[in-house]
Length: 182
Ligand SMILES: *[C@@H]1O[C@H](CO)[C@@H](O)[C@H](O)[C@H]1NC(C)=O
Ligand SMILES: *[C@@H]1O[C@H](CO)[C@@H](O)[C@H](O)[C@H]1NC(C)=O
Image (cartoon, rainbow, N blue to C red; front, side, top):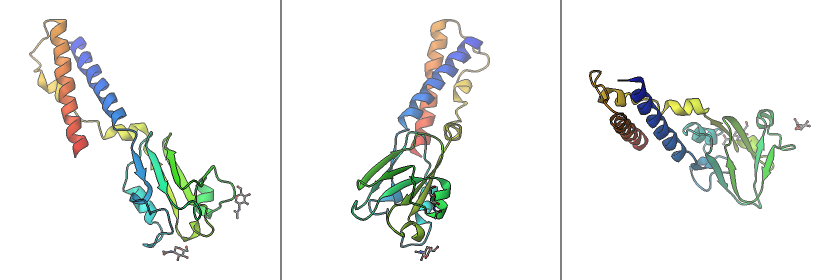
């Protein structure tokens, strides 16, 4: 396989990867898994974080909270304020009853309830957003395009290698859909 055709396969594959990666971005997560989860957890401290640990958050995803705005709120805070349930100086405060926060960077985000005493009783949440590199590992496989052409097949024209590129790209697309559907 010539340099040219392998770079066509590679760039097509990367284009498809990039497209798929952007399509699979922007998901919304209802905090706790359902609409009534932003409250003092009845099933023990840390149950909101158990929910968070069971999910993979990526840059571009959003968290959504629904709660009674008369009785509760969502505070985005520092790690220190999270640990001490300090509600006095949040990074951001949301009190509208229907809060959406975009996870615009990788790393940890800390949230606590602004209602008196709720954080101390476990109404708090850490969401860790994967770095783009970690996220990409999920979509990493696909040596398929190389295997499709044997080493003996030399591309004879630009059109031919372009077609190989498309075949490769579709193979990658197929693999990726299989992965996404799993
Ligand atoms: C959570 O922990 C606090 C003290 O750390 C305790 O007062 C509270 O009862 C606990 N809540 C549950 C549901 O276990
Ligand atoms: C809470 O945080 C504020 C601002 O960072 C700080 O001034 C205050 O001392 C903290 N309170 C407690 C009880 O840690």
